[in-house]
Image (tube, rainbow, N blue to C red; front, side):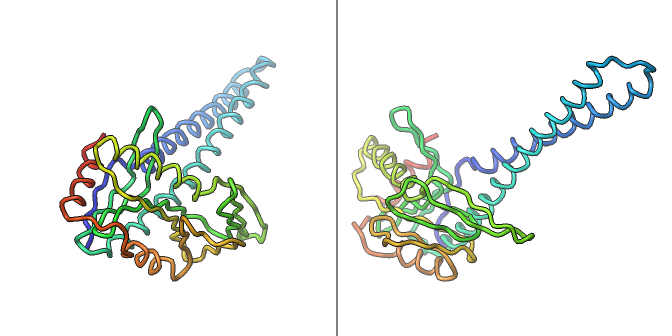
Length: 248
């Protein structure tokens, strides 16, 4: 089994923050409506502005709570996806190190890397996207399109930033980060959709950054990670892993 280096879990941290905000906004909304009803029953002639502004404030707080809940759902899906991906990456042998959720900074610009796999076959960054439905993907496009059908049969579409371009930026930042440490090594990248029901539609092949999805996605991802690249010695593997682990 591969060695796992878990750094700060940004998704879980953000999820907890959104959860706190959700409960605060929901509680304040309920309190606002409760005070509004209380004063209506207690006061024979309540102030007109109070009658208007109090429920408006309650609805505003409720809307904020709803948006926080939506953000919680997105983050929860991301957490599930990263856990599923990590279980797959653990299948690599003990010569590999897997660094999870690593944030690096180069010249004031940061990048959050879902996974960095370091092994005798080289170094690879993996961008994980736990999305459902059908993904219209184009390696050259800035945005991709997600289409999914709700339980009520309603089809919804949503644009999201291309994970291929996203991981390309991560690749550049990690390369510069390692270069500053005196390490010059070839880096590879890949995109992984861990949800087995996700389907991709594309017209051009992903030549530079492969994308893995579907039932065979995990198997193909592991095969890609085991592919021979620029060989690294055990000492080099350990050195890179320690640099990523030590940097805070």
